[in-house]
Every structure is written in structure tokens, then in C-alpha cells.
Amino acid sequence: MTAIVETDVAIIGAGPAGLFAVFECGMLKMKAVVIDALDAIGGQCSALYPEKPIFDIPAHPSIEAGDLVAALEKQAAPFLPLYLLGRRVETLVPHDGGFTLTTSAGDRVTAKAVIIAAGAGAFGPNRPPLEGLPGYEAGGGVRYLVARREDFRGKRVVIAGGGDSAVDWALSLKQVAAKVTVVHRRPKFRAAPETAAQLEAAAAKGEVEMAIPYQLHGLEGDGTTLTGVQLATLKGEVKTVPADHLLAFFGLSMELGPIAEWGLGLSHSHVAVNPATCETNIPGVHAIGDIATYPGKLKLILQGFSEAAMAAHAIHPRVFPGQALHFEYSTSKGVSGG
Figure 1: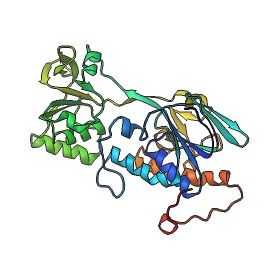
Figure 2 (figure 1 turned 180 degrees about the vertical axis):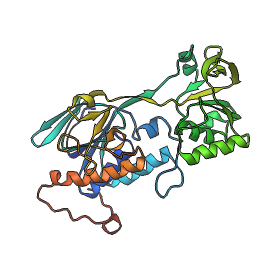
Figure 3 (figure 1 turned 60 degrees about the vertical axis):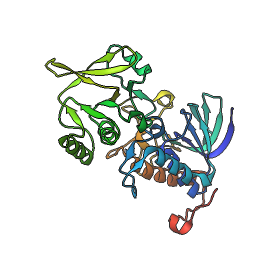
């Protein structure tokens, strides 16, 4: 259904940073419309790893990504945001002191300011160059995300990769899988030091098997059902690990899409912003979360939360010109829908 909407702030992206931006705008009495290309809120947290534990959210020693999204949605709910999902923002045009946005579904959104919280744009997995890969993807033997941990109960799982996703899922799946083998080209992982140390300890106890230094070489099975994964050393020595599933965590292929055509200051497929306000080179357009870049930027969800607050406060004078902002802490102000 096509929507024609007038709002205070248009938020592009319904991931954690975008959802928290709804709350921050709401606390300042600003209405928000949230637009996302995915059919559900949550961004990568929902689409790629809803059951993945996240360890760096304040006050939560561990929280699953899906639970974090649900909590953020509940936090934003009092401010009655309008979610336009399953459509991509195609154009962003300055208009009468504000902006007009059009979407792939034909929506027309007029806003006084814009917050781009689009992660790193459209994304998809980097696939390993293995013969017969599409057939095993279709059969479910090769996957790039874990939507349900129970799918791997009692299964033999090979995890390939050296980043946080590979390490986190190895630690999580060892609790339910029959066997977990981690494949990496070198002993050092690009993961958080604490979780990397936990993986090393699990390997020492025999809870996880480490195949180092190896890389993926081939797939074995009937073309649909996976039975084994071939691994090779850099010298060409090959061995086969029996497996029901291969989880390949080689990162995401990012594409900015139409955002790249909006005249924003881009730096290596990211949007450069003023770190004090998260404003881009276009006044009134702000960028937060993974898509934003500035000196000292950390790609952490909690940094995206902080940027959402800074952007909302910087936008307030555009929405309410001449009105002084007497901001109070939420502990004294409370939360009420706008």
C-alpha cells in the first residue's frame, strides 16, 4: 500500500540504531517515519543472526539479537512510529527547508530532517568459490547465518571464518551440535579477545575441533545433501571433515545502492559525518550506525545508539526553530508518546 506521509524525521533503516533514533526523537517530541528495504524491523540482527548472542550492550552481559530488536521496538512504541517496510528509498530531494523521499513502492515522505541508519547499505554474504555450491545452499547444507540454533542440534557443523561471527557461533553451537570444527587460515582470529580466548579454551577441552591452518577446498555429498567438507593447507594437503552443515562466515558484500547518488560525502562506501552532530555534508541529513564514518569511529551497536542521541538533539532546532531545548534525563522526564 502506497503512503503519502508528512513527518518531522524520516529514518532510513530499521536496525538497532534506527530504532533507537525513534526513541531519541520521540523524547524530544519529534515524530518519525522509518523506512527499510527488509520486510521486518531489526536489520542484520533480524535478517542474519536473530539468535546470535551480543555481549557489548550495557546492562546485558549477553542478549540475543532478536531479543534486543524486540526490546528496542517496545522502547520506541510509545512514540507511535510509522514503519514502511519492504521498500527502498530511491530519491532524497531537498524541498522547502526539508526533504522529500520517494520509495520503490511509490511512497512519498516529506520530512524536516533525515537520519540515515542503513547499516552499510544492501548486503549479502560473501560466498566461497566452491564447485556445486548452489545445490548445497538450496539443500540447506551450506548456510551463511544461523536463524535457529535448534536446526543444528545433533549435527556435525563446520564453521569457516576468523571473525566475531565464526567465534561466537562456534561457542554457541558447541552446546547443541554433535561436533563443531572451526576452519581458519591462521591461529589468530579477528574476534573480540575475550571470546577468542574462550574458543581457545573450548578447543583445549576438546569441545571444539580446530582446523588450522586450513581453508575450504571442496564439498562432498550428492549435490544437495552435504556429507563432508574438504579442507586444504596452503601447501595443498587435503583432508575431509564429515559434516552435515557448513557455516561460511566471510563477511558481507555491501552495496550502498541509491544512497550513493544523493550527493553525500562518501568515504570508502561510508558516509562522512561531523562526529559532534552526525550531520553529513547536506544540512539536515544525518547518518548514524555502521554507514557513518569519522575519525575514531567504532563499529559497535552502542556507538550507533550514542550517535542516534546526538543526531536527534542536533535536529531539534530544525523541527522546532527558535524553541529552546530544556532537556532533562529520562529518569526525571519519563516517557510519553508524542
